[in-house]
Length: 101
Image (cartoon, rainbow, N blue to C red; front, side, top):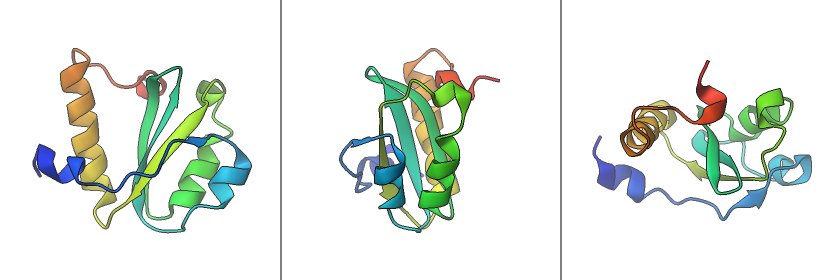
């Protein structure tokens, strides 16, 4: 996969990171980004976006998260790996803060 493939994802607008917004998204396979203060905290993927992001609502590390964005894709795991590689390349090899464990 090359950079062009992740750039052509049809990302949603940034939505408030709350139960109401999460329960309104599709139960489709896809990827998502969660952020606070213009900083990405988590990049994830799942076969059911709604369930995956709902699970993040109870993660203590994401308690300060304010917004999320998602994209529906049939190759969510591969796209997530590409997004993480791009993130690491821009941030001296580091992962988003809620993924560094």
